[in-house]
Amino acid sequence: MTKTLLIPDPAGTTDGHWQSWWARIERDAEVLDWSAASDPEQYDRAALVAARIAAQPGLVLVAHGAGCMIVARALANLAIPGVAAALLVAPARRLHADRFSRLASKEQDELPVPTTVVGSRSDPWIDLEQARSLASDWGGQFVDLGDAGHIDQASGFGPWPGGIGLRDNLIVRASRYVTSSEAREVPAQRWAF
Image (tube, rainbow, N blue to C red):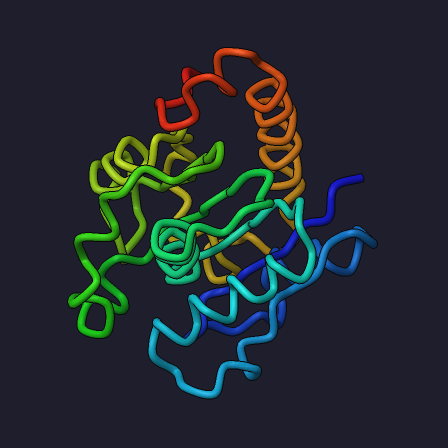
């Protein structure tokens, strides 16, 4: 089974969150511990993500909230090899806009891995069209969960088996991408999903 690195929103809590539930039920899943970042600024957090990926190539990244923005910047800025795919759930653009504004241009970079962005019609931190636009900018597929709030425990997402299903579908798409000769010849193209 592919190892999954769950990347929470640094400002959020993981108690009762679907990422904590996921790490408990799946032995190949682990929640990133943000306390290892010596500086709460995003540069350091992106470097922490990069170091964690470098230590274990082939990870599938599953991020939530501002964790999505950190993953996107880490992948765009640090040219990290060995990431299988990225599932980015409820990217929180508004929540940390003040901290991340100086890196805003990196939000628009196409990510070098197959990506799925999951959004909600009632997310207080990003509207649906902004989330859909990020998915397009990042070269990924977009999933609309409907009226799902911030896709966290406050909006009813403690256990979330659907998230594991989205990850599994992404792994299948990623394996097709890696094995296609077209992908090897033109690695910078957008993935067709």
